[in-house]
Length: 390
Image 1: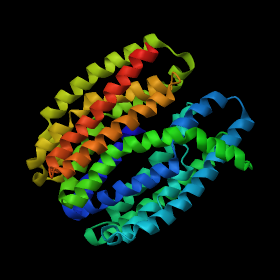
Image 2: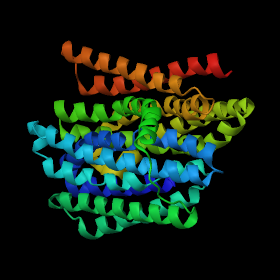
Image 3: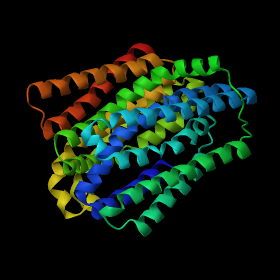
Image 4: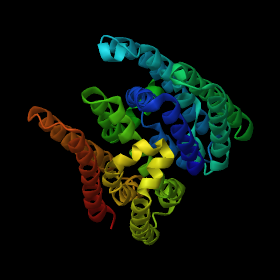
C-alpha cells in the first residue's frame, strides 16, 4: 500500500510539475502545507490512539462499534470546525489570494474522516486498506492524465482530489459494514469527551512532527518563492520514498510488538533498520541527478545539492520511526513519544525564530535546520529507549 501510494504521488508530481510549471506546482504545495494542519486536526491523533485501542478491543464487537462510531462523530465535528477556522484565515491577503484552492482542498477532508487506516492496522487486515487506497489513487491518476492539461486546470485537479476522497469514504464505510460487520451506534457525550481527551497527546505530538515539513514549506513560500517551494517539496518527497520500507516495517510490526513486548526482536529491527538505511543513503546519492530529472526535468538537476543535504534524513528518520511507534508507544510510553516531538519542535521553532531575528533566514539555513530538527528527535527518543525500554 505504501509503495503504491507513494508511487502514484510521484507519477503525479512528475506530470504536474511539467503541466503547471514550478510556480503553479509550488502554489499547490504551499496550500497543501497549510491544509495538512486541518487534516491533522480532523484526525486528532486517532491513527495511533485508535489503532492501539483496536488491538486491545479486537474481540469485543460492541466495543469496536462504539470506538468506530465515536471517532467518526468526532472527526465530522472537527471537519466542520476546520471550515470556520479557514474562513478566519481569509483575513490574510496571501492566503485570501488563493482562497478557492484552500476551500476546495479542504473538502478532501471527507476522505480523512471515513478512511479508517487505524481500524485496519489494529485488526491486522491491511489488505482491505490497500484495496481502498488502490482504487482511489488510480482514479486520481487516470482523471488527472485525461483532463488536467495546463495551469488553468489547477482547480479541476483539486476537484479530482475531492472526488477521490469521496470514493475513499464510501468504500471504507462499505468494507467496515460488510467485511467487519461494524454497526454505527449512539455514543454519549461523556464518552466522546473521554476519547478526545485520551487522544490529545497523540494529536499534539503529531502536530509538532508535522511542523518540520509543513512549517518549512510555509516559511519558504511566504519568505521566498513558489519555485523554491517546488524544489524543497520534490526533494522531500524523494527522501520519503527512500523511507517507505521503514514506514512499512514500523506499521507492520507495531501490533506484534504491542502484544508480545519482544525486546530481542526489537533490537534486531533497530540494528537492521540502521544498516539498511545507510545502504539506501549511498544508493540515493549515486542516483540523485537522475531522480531529479525524472521528477521535474532538466531544470531541477541544478538543485541536486538540496536533495543530497536532505538525504541525510534517511538514516535519521528511519531510526526515528522504529524508536517511536514501534518502541515507545508499543511499550506503553506514549507520553515520552509525544515529548520527543514537542521538545524537538520547540527547539526547531526557537532556532527558526532566531534566524528571523538575526536576519539570517535564508533558503539554505532552513534546509539545514530541517535536518537538525529531525536529529534532535532521534537523540530524545534514543535517550528514552535506553532509559525505559532496554
